[in-house]
Length: 241
Image (cartoon, rainbow, N blue to C red; front, side, top):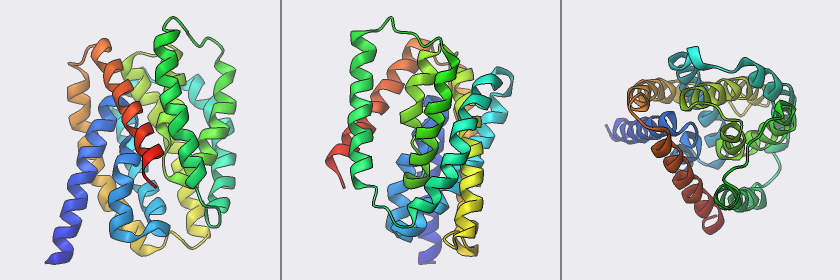
């Protein structure tokens, strides 16, 4: 009974994280990760999270499938997939403490620059190849780093539906190769896989709810929510271990 209650609490957290990230376009992994660490420990939490958000992102791709920018997906994946594999090997030995602090600083600076240079637009699509390299590598170390890549997708001028769906499809490729690599490294076994699949199913439901909310959300409110979450995640990374 106690084990079921623990799973139920984690499932509620997965639903909330997926719903919020489905509206914003990112953040579900980082919101859900502390819960998994508390329940399963640090080493197992990232592989479980990877399987969970793989399903959650796949559902967001489906719900926003008509707005996808496949060119950006291909460019991003060209950099992200090989370095996600490399990062998975590094994950088993490298502490991510200072990487986490660096990302926190990056997020806060990003929000500041959006207001100082609000007219800035990203027009060169090739930028998404090196962006994929950085994101893929860091994602393997931390489970999910959507806030790192999201400002670039926003600066490219995607609509809110295209932003959510395109970013999610980029994440699907990363999480798929990470799951395979984690399994080969023996840190994604049957226990972790079952937990990840169960929470992923809950996240799929959250993505459906998020799609209904997103249809009624103005772009101005959408961008405001994005920036609020960037600041919250950034401060959390800087302040807490």
